[in-house]
Length: 116
Image (cartoon, rainbow, N blue to C red; front, side, top):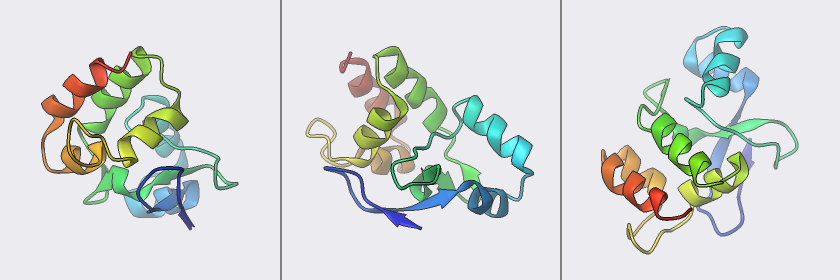
């Protein structure tokens, strides 16, 4: 399933059945990962789905959870957090998710803290 968020880089989206298959985890465990903010998703494409870039080597990106919590503490909804993570950030010089995937979580979280 493919979707594009406003002002964000295009990404493939994984539905719950896709996540079960990709993560090789039962649905209950996938829901727990979502509840615990190891992953976040949206219904913007009609079905609930998670951006594929949030999954690395068939596991949730390890730095995503703390970053999502920082964004939520700043008042972001899941949709707003997804938009920020996928969109270009001038301070970081690229999409925050790309920086997270490159191991730059401290920089991303520092910028996220200033957004509140």
